[in-house]
Amino acid sequence: MAVLKRLSSVNPSQTTGTYTALRAAQALVSETRALRDALSLMFERHEKEIHVRTMTKALECLEGDRILHRLGPPRDGRALPDAPS
Image (cartoon, rainbow, N blue to C red; front, side, top):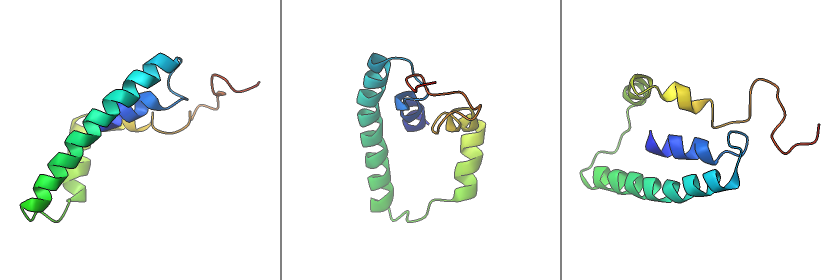
């Protein structure tokens, strides 16, 4: 969830300032390292599968759907902040 939150904050269509995006990108590096370390540990423990249903349920419980829509372009048809009208 932390990686998704940071990634959505880096999305230029979801932020209004470069400083906010810069800070999110810097934090994203730390979060992805932690994710990499967790996945490496899982691999070392011979946990070779990620169970999609379990992950989906976990994301739903953590309100991941609230964040997932921020990863792509705006869906309401509005122009990007710096796009010509």
